[in-house]
Image 1 (cartoon, one colour):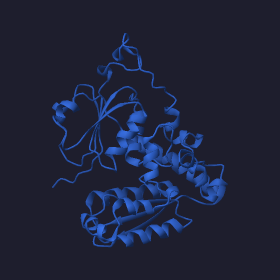
Image 2: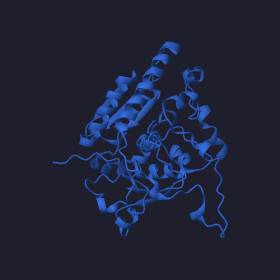
Image 3: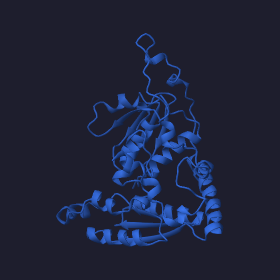
Image 4: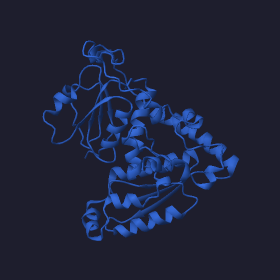
Length: 316
């Protein structure tokens, strides 16, 4: 099984991409390194898990510096994002000139959730700015699960669509009726062909994210953005204590997995965590992805902690 999964990346490249020397899929390629700072996960696995001897003690190893060495500063995510989009736009133009095609993104949006509307709108704007084809299919909140799957199948078969995104979370009403149709969220996401799973939620992509020595075809974008924000802001991750608030399949879980791949010591806070304030105060890096406004207070943080707020919460 290991050999099969490891060989997925090359075998699932679409034909037009196999013939294009301009943009290979490997995360370690020069194209990717020109756009983002995040290294390939496989390159991070080269760091051996060599535990120090009892005489030396973990606290004295050179790799783990004092957490008080952090300097407080603002992480300018908007500026970093604009730079990445600008570089992507240049590569898309080169791609169009070279092979006569541009990337295509198909998005499925169910219902009228306000934060999801914002996310979808921002994706449409970013795609337009980068020259990426953007196709949105909107379905009513009371649609049946098979209707979503039908749209996914159309996108799977469309050669002009290279990435498919089902905007999550899906409406609760849909989740209630889906079990009767044997269609839960996992089943719906599994319908997306692996090579077009740009959200990185396919079970194989998540599995490869979790396993050392493996490289997913795609990494969920919000966790990837958090890591890129930290790296481009020169925040050291290796050896640091990272606390992730929230354990959703969309953000919390993959963020914790990705931080672990970057050699942070990771703790997840969830609604059943005892004394979450005390746990949060241990964090060198704290990422809040709970979807609850005003959850993290100043007394949850130690001086110099790096804080990333992932959530978007409408406040009346």
